[in-house]
Image 1 (tube, rainbow, N blue to C red):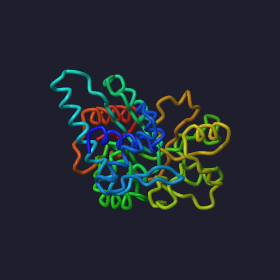
Image 2 (cartoon, one colour; image 1 turned 135 degrees about the vertical axis):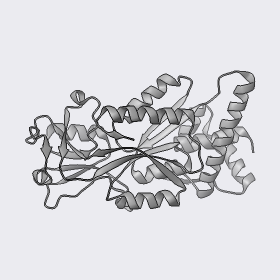
Image 3 (tube, rainbow, N blue to C red; image 1 turned 120 degrees about the vertical axis):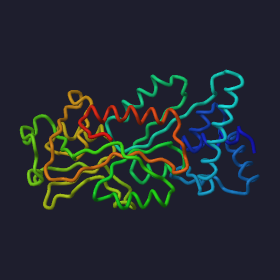
Image 4 (cartoon, one colour; image 1 turned 180 degrees about the vertical axis):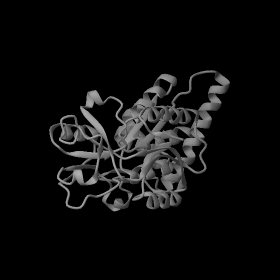
Length: 303
């Protein structure tokens, strides 16, 4: 086993397939596959499960990635210390739900750390965010906790040896188009929404208890399930549909959306997930600090 093989395994884990990893590494796919196959034979473990749906880490593979990432990083830092040359590869990844502020914080990271060659901001379901953080694909994850999902998420974090830090609290708000019939109301009641379609971001059906929708309205209009913000914005701008969110809109004039306060709902927490035994890197700490700045500027009660 050598450092190059570790880098190959990390590349496949980070890119999600042998094909994409080979392109990122500028090597042929057979070369990559043969190297990892030799490593699996040497270790007598299977690191990846290859299916038609994609390439996934096995339990042994996830454990290997966690250790290998530390070794590769330490090796590169050691090399940098003695050669005074730029580190070959610097990597930072965050997995999050569909929140404004993530992109802005990542832009600040790009400005502060121009020598980082691979930055990843991945939007996904809460279950996948927990998985990515536990497996080391992302150094941190960002999710919301509310009365509906908090107990289930905290239980899942414990099972995956993850902990969380609270960034701030916010009151759920309704996002609607500027010409919506409810747009002139500064505060919206739940009963006001009963006739309008609700847009929700999808979750893994296996983990429905992880939902970050704070409530379900009985007798409400149709529910529209989507998985990206562009579709959400498009639907809201053309219909009377709404979605429930944090109200964090960094450029509302560009999106055409407005936020209205929602009455009589509990506060939510914005939290950052990380491995319990992992000490956050400098870049991760900077990302979190910039995310806090963004949240504070958008009326979130930041701790």
